[in-house]
Amino acid sequence: MIKRTIQKRMEERLFKGKIIILYGARRVGKTTIAKSITAKHKNSRYINCELLQNKTALETTNSNLLKTFLGNYRLIVLDEAQHIENISLILKILVDTFPDMQIIATGSSGFELGQKVSEPLTGRARRFMLYPFSFKELQNHTDNITLHAQLENMLRFGLYPEVFNQPESEAIEQLYEITNNYLFKDVLQFERLKRSDLLTNLLQAIALQLGSEISYNELANMLGVSVHTIKRYIDLLEKTFAIFRLPSYSRNPRKEISKSQKIYFWDIGIRNALIQNFNKFSLRNDTGALWENFCIAERIKANQNKGNYAKTFFWRTYQKNEIDYIEEKDDKISAFEFKYNPRKKTPKPAMFLKLYPDADYKVINNENFMYEFLGIPEFGNDLDN
Image 1 (cartoon, rainbow, N blue to C red):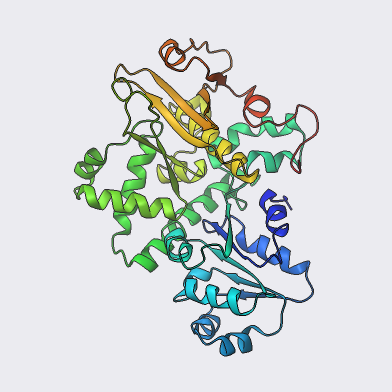
Image 2: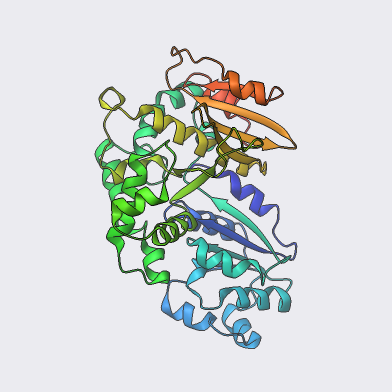
C-alpha cells in the first residue's frame, strides 16, 4: 500500500478542536485514508454518507438527534459528506456542540463541500486536498532508477491508484471506467445538468489544446453554446478536480499578456482517455504538451503536500515570448521550461530575464525532473521530511 503524504499531515491536526475536511476527485483514495485513520483509533466510527439511511439520519439541526445517531465515539468520519443537505450548518453544530468529538469530512465535489462550507466553518476547519498519486509518494516505495523507467507509462496512463502499475489493458479499461462513470457524477447530480455530452466535448476540446492558451469564445463557437455556459462548465469541472487553470503572469501589462489562461488536467491518464490516445511516445505528436502538464501538476502536488503554497502562472508577451511555468513566493520568481528530451537545446529567454533579472530559471527534462524540480534526493527519499 502506497503511503499518502497528506495522511500524516491530517493526523497531526486531529483532536485540536477543528473539523478536518478532505477534498479530492472520486477514486483518488479518500475513503482509503479515512478508513486507515479510523483503524488507528479504537473509539472511532466510519459513516458512508451516500447511503440513504445515513444521509437521512444526519440531515437534522437537532443536536440531540445528531448525538443519538453518531454515538459516543471520539472520532467520526463522514465520507462523501457533500450528499448531506445543509452539510456546512450541520458540521458547524457538531464542532460547536461537541468539541471533544473529532469530525473528518470527505468530499468529491468542491462546489458542494467547498463553497457552502467555507463561510459557516470560518476558523473551525482545516482543509486538505488529495490528488491521484504523486511522483514523490511513489518514490518512497521504489528506487529512483525503477521509478524513472516508469515515467513514460505515467505520461500515458496517469497516476490514479487503481490504474498505476496495472497491465496496459487493465489500466486503459479502468481509465475509461473512471472517465465515463465517475468524472461527471457530482456535476450531473448536484447541478442537475442534463448535457453530459457537452461536458465530454468540452473536455475533449481542452485536451486537444493542451499547453495552449484557452479562448472561451473559440470554445463557445466550436461547441455551439454561449461563452457564459463555457465558463460555468469549466468552473464546475475545476471544482470537481478534473482540471485546473493557470493564469498568465504580468508586472508590465504593456508588454505582457495579463488575462490569458491555460487549462491542465490533474491526471494525464484522464486526458488521454478523453481523446482515446494511449499510444507510446514513438507514435505521438503531443509529448511536449504531456510533459508540460505532468510536470506542472506534480510540482503543485509536491508543494501542497509540503504546505508550500506558491502562486503559479505561465508567461507570454505580445511578441510570443513564452515561459511554461512560473512560481512566485515572497517576491521571489522561479521560472521553468519543460523539454522532455534532455538533448534538445533550449535558448535562454532573453526577454524574460531582462524584465526579471533576479528570477531563477531552469529547463526541466526527464533526467533532472526528480532532483532539480521535485527536490527528490538522488539517494534515498525525503517523503517524511
